[in-house]
Length: 203
Image 1 (cartoon, rainbow, N blue to C red):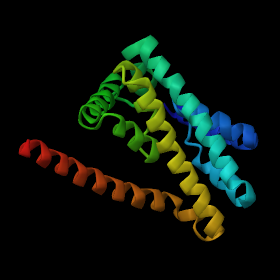
Image 2 (image 1 turned 180 degrees about the horizontal axis):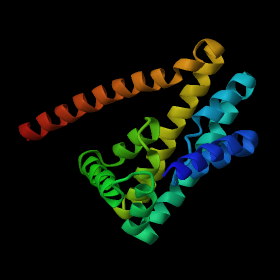
Image 3 (image 1 turned 120 degrees about the horizontal axis):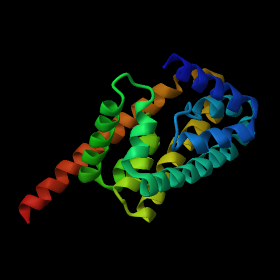
Image 4 (image 1 turned 90 degrees about the vertical axis):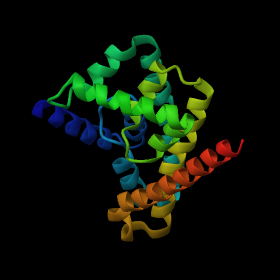
């Protein structure tokens, strides 16, 4: 367990040392496997070269969506055994924890459909859980890609734009900004869900 945590930490440092290539690799692999999120590398590169921040956000988005497609393929071709193997490795409860992940994803899909993918792509929720589960649940592929692109793009461009505008002043509060945006999105979804239920009752 500790060895795996150390390995993931070292992988993050390795990606960071590769610059733009590392950013793309990190973003790509993070969409379907257990590596640190690319936000840390993106933040560092944005602060170093603010004039290239939007370019870095675009690279990060494209690489992440391509990785998401790989995750979707893992779900389609290898199913639950692959999901359980990937997401039981960091937990003492093993497959029980992986099952909890999958059950939660399935509930969210039943309730929100493609919005669940968008929400996981934008927020700190583990995106890789949703990419692989999307393949297992055979979600509409085009809807999956579109939700992934919009969600990942919104997240990475939000980070880059904020750093372009505020730089060092805001770098330690990026996660707070994402959390606040997430809370606003949750509120929006709750209102939308209640409104939809009300309309269904009228019909």
